[in-house]
Length: 286
Ligand SMILES: [Fe+2]
Image (spheres, protein in one colour):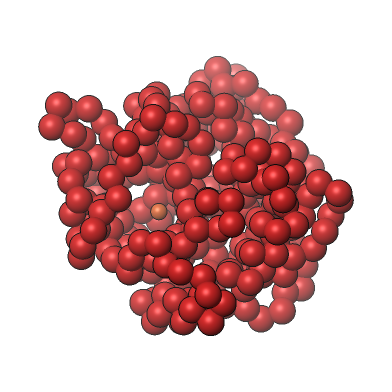
């Protein structure tokens, strides 16, 4: 904790920031929200001609009219109002422009920042959820971005916003290909792959236990939704995973057993298939 002027500055880790919701653009937001309702056991509601919300226990997706496979914004909630004020002071101290948050899920006082690729990250205090019907346990948990300059993204999230670097993947020429960073006890809440494009790589729901992945896979089978990758186990984070695509081609991950970070420093992994999947086939991003 530092003091900027007379304001305490607080990092994303100190603020215990966690991924609360995502807004994803789509040429057909109704179709997208309805897919999440079916695949991820959520309720879809029309908000306007251009916006639909899919909501389930501890997960919310905003589907907004726009370009397919494009992040509109991500919402990270923090633990209390002092943390929010401190994180805002931290961003300002780091010369990050503080913007208005467009998120409907945050209380007044939320703010937003843009990362070097222009991804809009909203930070705020979560409004109380509507009373939810019982649904499968699958809190939205991490966002993995794609970027042509992963090192600049790492420097922004860890250097300017105070995420903690937990693992990197380096190629044979010692070029950074992936970074994993966290804002709480979870191995990663934001990660980023080096690719030839930029935007979202995937987002993830942490279901906790292996048997819940099995249950999701059985659920998807009953809806004729095919797994595109996995089940497997990642190297960094050591989590079990399975992936599907939504109708726009956004990759959805469900995960279990994601590493809890206590007191270790950042690790380094080789750019290799086994880093992506200890059990089998890896998808190396290019
Ligand atoms: Fe992931």
